[in-house]
Length: 488
Image 1: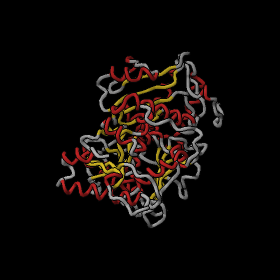
Image 2 (image 1 turned 90 degrees about the vertical axis):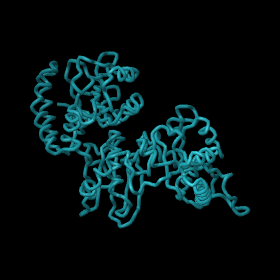
Image 3 (image 1 turned 180 degrees about the vertical axis):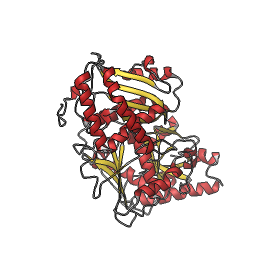
């Protein structure tokens, strides 16, 4: 029987002989390897991806498994298998059409010695393929007694059928069918979406060990949302080397229920498990249930969505943005050589903070509220490499870009993650979304000797934008867009 505490060398983490059955103890590194692979799959498949999930035994902490990552990708349309073959071939995946099933395309990945390392299933959301993989995984994650029963069954079967995979699979069939029937009873009928989140035990905090993994670790496969036992609107985000990324919120945070639902959806769409914590007596399940359906449509305008949002950029970057005609994410700018890669020796507070953010955050463009100097504080922080959250501290203003949020949302480009107002993945064209641009040369000068601050520039720039809107009668007027976007 394998030692459950055994950690394999990196070279042995993945790779199993094709026609044999070999089990190894659960490895926490599998979750990290999945995150890396999921990032490559998203880059290869682009907007066709709806969700990516780590499934199979390597996704279930505490369960012995064949050292193979099982992955299921939900796509918008899987009718053209050839496009997936072309996109996945550079990653080492081969389409095995003989193993396809109705509603599923199968792509294995193998090492040069023919050992299997990844089994990739492509399907559409909420198909039978999606349901069986995700429901089985989530049930075993939530029920330790069933997980232990399955572990013992697998160890018994491998002791008798290590060279006969067909017999090994057949021996598991009755157990799998029984678990799936249990899992289906606990699923939402409308979405068949199991185990949206994990309730944290009483007293748990993000700095505590992971209560759902055998060794208490998190890695990048976990997020958390904690409702604090305080009657205010405190809202803080972050993570750490031994803590999941996420948020801590007071009970009076505006639209707390919707923020929490957005956070759960976003985290799960990126393959992360979500831990939700709340004070004793606080019915977090009822809160989520009350807002879940109302937050499902990503193209729906909510009552509190501002018409206009703002993004701040530097004076040096604005001419390039005008020339390209699009606003680009940090990842896109890095890929195109506009910004240098971060140095591993960079010990600045901003760099350290970004290390603990989910990797895909850099794939998005962030926006803020008009009237709020936060985006200018972000600009000030980037300039000095340290957090400058004081809106009255000196800095060098850049350019404020004003965008039509309602149109962005209606066109399906807005991403809600529960932590930020809204963000857009990869890039955003200036046309038709840019409403206006205000640079430091467009605003009134301060008093002699007065230095610019995030608050002062925000107030004056927003005032200029509002006056331009009034003079054009409508912020969405095309003339206003052209006039304002031509100014530095």
